[in-house]
Length: 192
Image (cartoon, rainbow, N blue to C red):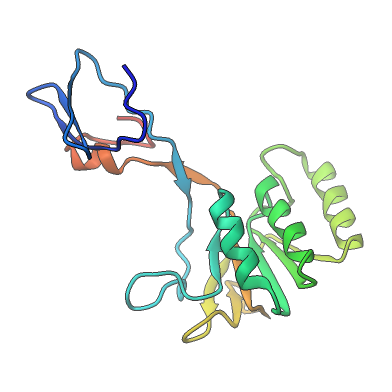
């Protein structure tokens, strides 16, 4: 039975029931939580404002709504940085170029797309991106997002820094486990 558009808000484990946000109660014999994933945001100082929201100019890159937010903000800006050199991060970098920004890709690993490519292929990709005008920084650990009320730059663990108006985080994903945690289930590495 499908309950389209209904968000599961509670799991009553002892009663073996799931409660939906519209009040529906669904009994179960076995329960599978397939809640998808959310963007992974590395522990970087200065990402958020005191109210917990991202500092203006900081974005995650995962879905179409994220693209729309980035696009609106990027208009008229000068420099963008993408944290993460995987496929989505590189797509974000090319997207920022469409707004005529100077673009930097900052990647923690020693070569781009390190999950999919070996070091030689990653180096070739890096050279190709640089020929397209994208600045590539590999082996760089982002430590701080600079700026008080909006993004103005990034600093790295080696002491270097770059200026930027826009910072897009594309550093992978993590399992969306909020519902499982609220239900008191133990979650390790995304497995309940």
